[in-house]
Image 1 (tube, rainbow, N blue to C red):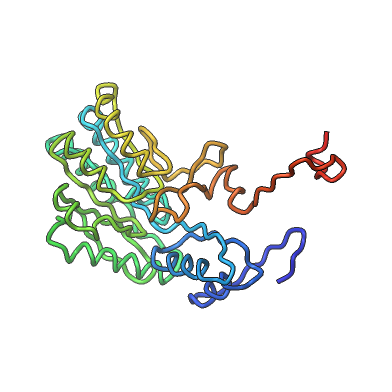
Image 2: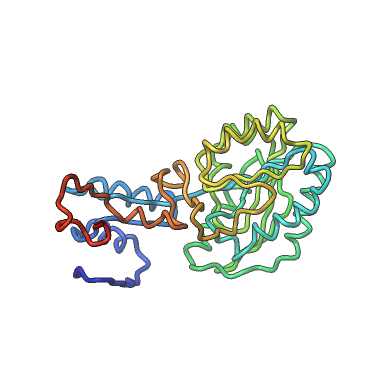
Length: 301
């Protein structure tokens, strides 16, 4: 590997030793990574253990919770449920911003949301996943849910080979907070609905989430007071907070933040999408009292 004015190399390989060799190579000065929590954390540790440590910008996992506030759920819960199904299964659920958890109140409005989501998911045909390993991980994630008494199946399907079919489960806030595994990302079209008893329990649940790429609030005008309670919590949990939408779309824009507190990413001050993303691979230099003839051309008067 040689230094040049613009070099792109694609290295094919399906084993972890490829990534291990890359991050330990002395000419590699910074690393950007998107992948599993286990694999990313292993590479992060290798970067830190180098004789000269280098920055590692890892995007490791996120369930991107959605919160359906009461007025919005009552007015359009079914429509939000159908929209969630579309976002949940987009690209076989292989989006890092895939909204894997929906938080909604107990009662008829929440029931309508769950029913509409399940009906929409039933219409989604199995989709092919990117690799055999990703497909196996999705099947293992589903098995983790099937083996838990803390969740109830709403829609359960079988996935074979590299295909993935959608699955939907339901639990309550107390069970979710007591079982850490329910908050671990399942990369694929699997959704979990967490039912809450009211505003206080919704806020408690929000505080229990780990770091996320995104957090979504579905709200109407009558939900503004509850939204004000949730926002200070969610802005500490996620790199992007949005209202009345679905987070799978990520726009390349000046204001975009695609990162978040650990384990969503290893550097909460960085973004991997948007104009600020280039800062991950730049090093600032201050030129103090240098004569103009020595300054870089773009800094000269």
